[in-house]
Length: 179
Image 1: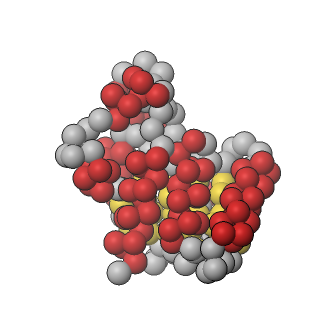
Image 2: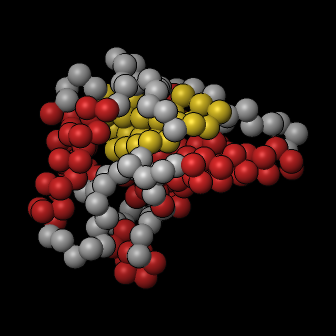
């Protein structure tokens, strides 16, 4: 399995870590507008740590190339804790997604999982805008973890961002789509 993650901030890097540990893909490739050298080193060190305590070794290659992947996770976007109105934030992230779609290497069999907020609206828009691609989101999985409640705003108020629950929801979505 090959996984491309677009956006290696708090959420994207957590998704990469969780995918590496739980899915054990052949390749995880990160892409971002920032320099990814430190992110890649950190993931390699986590892989080495995993391998030092587990018999089954991770063989995941970690790089910063844009690759044709089985799963493309879009974790890039403006955060929702900056006070912008919902409509403005939606338009900003739609523009960002348009730019991302010009860069990715998606095949007919690639599955694209959107984590960019507002997740459901962006995913539904992307399905209409790019009907040739297979778009998904992992909000249903995340809502299971949150007992059916949208608690993202509550977490933002106390922590400033969300990453652990959303990252695991992406892992679960990839497992579901891999069946």
